[in-house]
Length: 134
Image 1 (cartoon, rainbow, N blue to C red):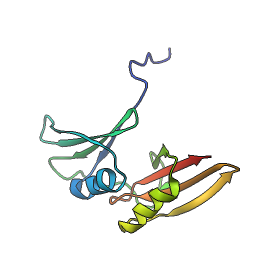
Image 2 (cartoon, one colour):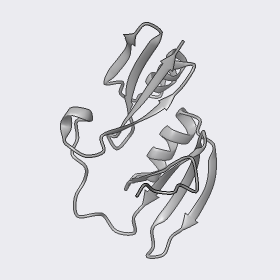
Image 3 (cartoon, rainbow, N blue to C red):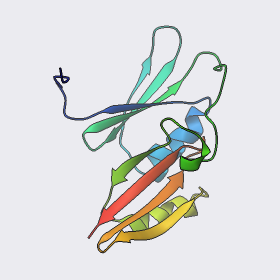
Image 4 (cartoon, helix red, strand yellow):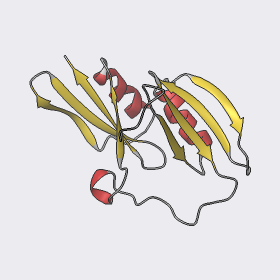
């Protein structure tokens, strides 16, 4: 039986012990609109950012978790390793990311005629892929 979706978008949660640095990246550098700060049951704090029809949730746990995600982006481990945004201004995004001092492990690369990608790294080492179709 397939799921019966009630919303045509996803909400992505990113747990971090560095919410200020993560907000500086996603809100200030990438320009995702800030929606709300929520105090969660159990003491976690969630910051919600709009990404198109989706929500990116930056969550600071009350206490440090027992483990951190393996570094190294896509080739570093199995599991969720990156997520993708489609943009029309890839060069501008990369200029902004580099100017703010963030890493670009995969520079702008044409995959197919008219389709380019790049991957950037957030302050916690998570990879975000940008796709630009002309």
